[in-house]
Length: 187
Image 1 (cartoon, rainbow, N blue to C red):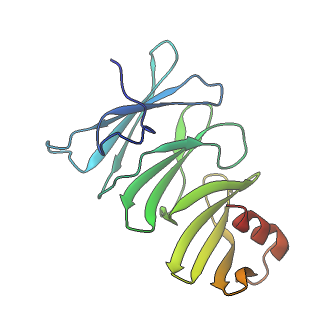
Image 2: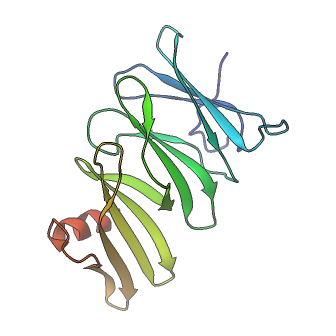
Image 3: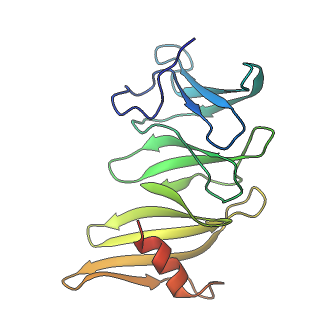
């Protein structure tokens, strides 16, 4: 079966679609929805190999949403990771992360992350950008530790007549403020 690319901007929400991994695994992730059936608030994801053989099946609950799933290397290990928007809001969204393992995908431990953008920041470190108010933007930096994704540090970006200002909020962060602020301000 031929599926549209999930990243196509014109694609309607909750329509079956596919994403191809760009990390050399050759995997295709097929996202299947049943919007009118008993599993209307769920998505099934079938990971298939180049030869069409199934690698893994994943299922997740969905609340509401209009953002597409994404494949990107969040942790810098060379494997694509799955970003799945579970619930999308007007500004921030709830994202489930599943890390690519070479054998499939493994869910990050703990709660989903909340923000409008999730992106790689440095090897083993990714950033979750969230808007707190019209004048403040917070960026939480998560360090991957196995499947755990604890927050390593948070910065606040505020806006005034002089432009954007960045300040480290976290006490005793393991890296200098400039490292986090440079990564936060580059997006």
